[in-house]
Amino acid sequence: MSTNKKPFPKPISFKKLIGPSFIILALGLGSGEVILWPYLVSNYGLGIVWGAILGITFQYFINMEIERYALVKGESVFVGLHKIWHGTVYWFIISTFIGFGLPGIVAASAQLVAYVFGFANFKWLAIAFLLFIGFILSLGKTVYSIMEKTTRTIIMFGVPFIFILVLILATKMHWFLLFQGLVGQGQNYHFLPAGISLVTFLAAFAYSGAGGNLNLTQSIYIKEKGYGMGKYSHKIAGLFASRGSHQEIKLEGEDFEINDENVANFKGWWKRISLEHLLVFWFVGGLSMMLLMILSYSTVFGLDNTQGISFVINEGQIIAKVLFPWVGSLFLFVLGVMLFQTQLGIMDSTSRIMAENFAINKIFKTKNNKINLSKIYYSFLWAQIIFGIILFLCNFYEPKQLIVLGAIINSMTMFVHIGLVAWLNNKELPKMFRPSLIRKVIIGFIFLFFGFFSGFVIFSSFFG
Image (cartoon, rainbow, N blue to C red):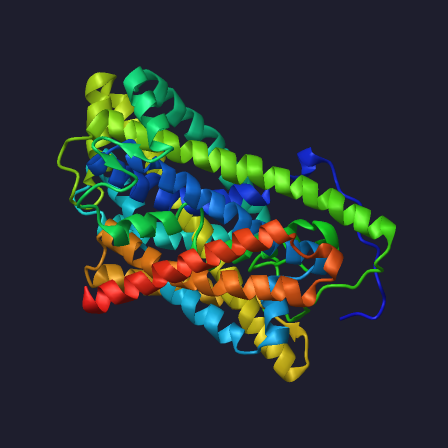
């Protein structure tokens, strides 16, 4: 940590602030929002909508505590946790690769796009998509910049398109059932229907938003965007912009004087990023989930939707019959693109997590902060791509199975990181920047919930 204290930057306008929440939102659009919750609704009705909204509300509070640390310290939570316990770097590298190395989302994307264009086998298209993701991220001048722009464009087009379809296809009764579902009132059941797979339900709950270690990238994006003390942090350059070069990497943040002006600046930042995350992540994310669930119910509820992601293709076929064939194809294509964008975002975020933890370990061990962080990032990126291709070549590519398995693993990693971040904030931040009592209670409840979830999944897997 530098001995020269920096001023806590003044907050920027809300308009300039919007950005990181679009990325964390896009990370969830392909798992819980597009696949798992609509799948459950297609089979069990809208009485489970409450679970999706509660899940994304939980993640709002989880993400804000992650952002809190980065805003005050100007460094990622990974740096802070390493200072407390050096073993965290190994945990985050291993659990991130295992949790997100299963390429279920890109498999779902390829299946939908293959159906639209009449391809018989989507495995080869999924492999091509993985390679395409690698080239997109490798050729970007600045990784964050390309991610933010593409994510915002896709969400700005995809969500309104789905909203228009819902307005056309959903009846007043469907909307009534949706609102009943917000309070857990289903058709002949309360909260959970008989026969529902609790593992799948809780997997969808964990993916109501990003899920797993992906939530932790909020601290990296806060730093990359230059919010708060992140103004003084280092950005990842494009792969070919830094080819063969070792740069001075500053992973640790800067100190600032604790005075009235700096505390006021922090509070200004906190209010703005809280509102930004509430509007973009919680509201747009929650709205997107509800729209996709009511669209699933109004088109395919009651059909045979048990095989993989067949319910999405069934949706496209029903939309094509009710409206026009090209609308059904466009719907499937848009979802395919949204899923592709999600896998793109996941590959970027997981590579950031693993690269930063690898760099933290190396820098603190060697005391040499000259390192090629970009090369480390791309090494992890292409390692994930190669792993995914191997799985596909071994014919392990059924989308829903991969997504549910990944969600189960990532729910356990969420239990761990919720506890670690709460510990970090209450140990390392000055008292005036720590979470309030009510937030501590909320985070404590969420921590216990995911602890129960993890225990339930483990028990069910071995003794169920």
